[in-house]
Image 1: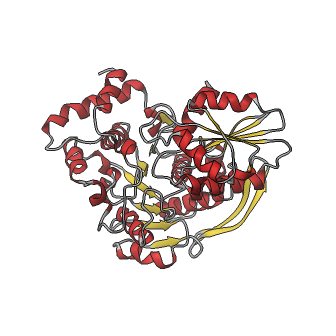
Image 2: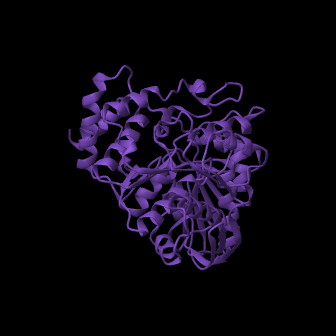
Image 3: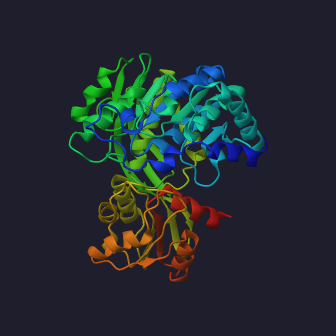
Length: 439
């Protein structure tokens, strides 16, 4: 296979990411039953290629928000110690290669094609056809083993218990938080989601809870584990102050204090993500993490599309906030760290499974001087006109420009040096616009 053939092979398989939307109901005993999911096909696929996911140690991360940032920070910290580190995240912004990283580089086109050729060769031996996400996850596990990774940081795709990534056994299991994204919001959703996310905990796992869980904690305690650290109890953020280009934080864990820690990311939530990553890595090593290595790791960490400032004059911000909690965090960060001396323009697109009115309220739609709705080239895209109709009911008139690249061109055409442009609502919208801006 060459790279194009590998992509064509991959795209022949069912794309659960493209079809999901609202798909989980607390009325069902498990998320797997909500969507016909099971770990059996993934288990069979991994056995066919020699179970490479057991060739290295793993930090396994789930959560409604913050898991991508936490994963990237954790991987950078591990790499700073000299370990060979694999990183698996989703979704991608541009090329699918972005999801598979080893020693701070994406998988090459040739390597990707080779791994896909291997998976294609064993597929006829399987009793069921793997999904696209299962193939990508298997590719990551195979490639990490081939490259001699000593540890992998793996981000869950959805929930946890039945996610394809859960064929690995996390030495550390991280649950950043519990939100209602990808649920129908019916009564009992918090308990149900917590129970599914707890499914990544294995008997040998040390557990990090990245937010106070309150009455949900019993779900994580119910899974056999090797100890739990919870944000606000065993570890936490003592201070999180605005600094030039990011935040200054004081973080405490059972192993000690990190004072005046410069976090080069915008938003108070990134102090919490950094604390969660620090807790995970310290539990992984079972010792304090050196401050010099912490500074090095944070300096080298890149968080694309996480309140990423990609331009000035006007200030141009990209954030893939895809649910109300994420949208609120974006708005708080904008208000806290970016005083507006000119106009604020919003470019926004969403995927189905989201309630437009709830997202628009969370982002503070009425406070923007101009609004442009767009939609990604994705099967789950909400029509931009539908979002505009929801905004109109809230008293906000907006432009509708379906093509994301045309939407950002329009935004830039109507803004001046002191203005701000925020692109948000979906990583897929942000990805298309980011590719244009950085090309």
